[in-house]
Length: 260
Image (tube, rainbow, N blue to C red; front, side, top):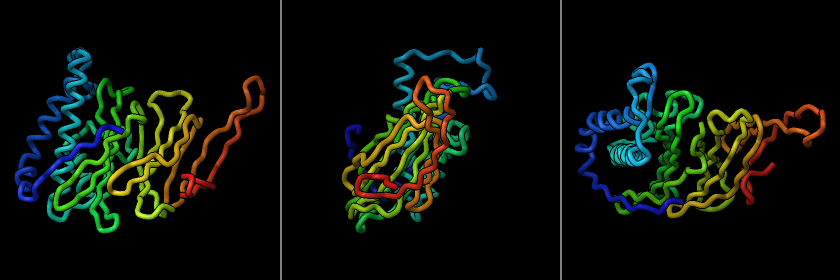
């Protein structure tokens, strides 16, 4: 987990932050054009490959713009999961992950309460490189709000770097006062289509990884409430001629994570 960051935002700044929305979009677009090439918008010949230092600085700047956008959306009157997700999509424009890979559902936002404490979980990606196989910097963030101040408790997701990834809330956590979120994805361009999964628990103050699984070939995940359907191909030991077996598992949250 990246080091937790405390971010204080006063409610009376909301209107000002929203008024700056168009400026944030332009700033995001100006930066991303220098590190991410889309052939429909700019020919490859017009794109200058950035230095490693410039690329790193640009990723930080893009990440910070999205963070500001999330906080401005969270403190707005009548904020909701949908409005926060829409704000992220608005500032990233065509460079949000779901514009290229709609099935990911990322950007993602879930605004709720844990024992009366407002919490927010978000997921987004910063894209660099080229649109064919983009370099995906993945972020999954966990916020809480206390005394009118939003605090970023954890900024994680590096496990899904380079991945087309998704996030979903899992209902029915067996641990009191926790909400669980499943993240899953596979590396873009991986011909083995190997799936990785992480189950995070959030209690409003800290985040822990409850369960994880990786390397499932041809894997696919669907989530409905507290039921997770996982299907993948199970290959015979190397050297045998048996065809792969298609496996379907129905999982539910349990003490050890996701269990059959």
